[in-house]
Amino acid sequence: MSVDVSSALGVFDSGVGGLTVVRALRELLPNESIIYLGDTARVPYGSKSPDTIRRFATEDTQFLLNRQVKAVVVACNTATAHALPDLQRSFRVPIIGVVEPGVEATLEASDCERVGIIGTAGTIRSCAYQHAIAMRRPDVRVEAIATPLLVPFIEEGWLDHPALKSVLREYLKPMLAKGIDTLVLGCTHYPLLVPMLKRLLGGKVRLVDSASTCAAHTKRCLEEHCLLRTSRTKPTLEIHLTDYSEQFENLAHRFLGADFGKIKKAQL
Ligand code: DGL
Image (cartoon, rainbow, N blue to C red; front, side, top):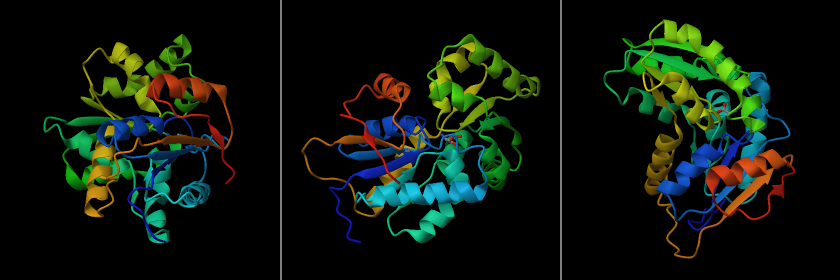
């Protein structure tokens, strides 16, 4: 397959969460075109088995490669945790995940001692974050819990709902009791909860997400492969969904504040 620097970057997630990575990519790489795939027909990925997640991630990547993308960002922790090495072995373009960037961002603060991680059941069960932190900083204490009720709230656009507040309180109680100083948002959907998390945690706990470090990794990777787009024509942003949803469109407009034209129906 010939790779063209003017081709778009491909980005995928199970739903709306990957837009948090798209936003960071557009900030850091404003000259790049992006094709986004949200697998909204099959969200959530977090409750699926590793085999199913690997199959979905392979189909998502293939969909993007059929549109000649020059690199793929797996903007989903669950898919990164279970499928990244497989995808990197199976496809010839650079494929970038979100877990390593998330760990890097977590350990940036040298005073972090007790880290809480929240993520989908699939991500937490994979122990991808726990292992990656232990490899670099075995002294850091890690409390990881699966928080499967959060993605449905976010996909529904209930970002400010009192029911979400109660759910978050319940989830965070044991971690706060253990005195975490850092909370890793181990799911690309969760940055959409930051305003509510800040209200709940009141600045006592550092919040970490992988979006901006993932964008930095992507930039380095494109530089290394001489794939940065050089054209000065306006870059494009296309969104493809396996199932159209109005909530997605509203959230995407609110969150990205960007023009992405009409959402396209993806057939995987
Ligand atoms: N945003 C995804 C993640 O980072 C997936 C959430 C889901 O589909 O369960 O894990």
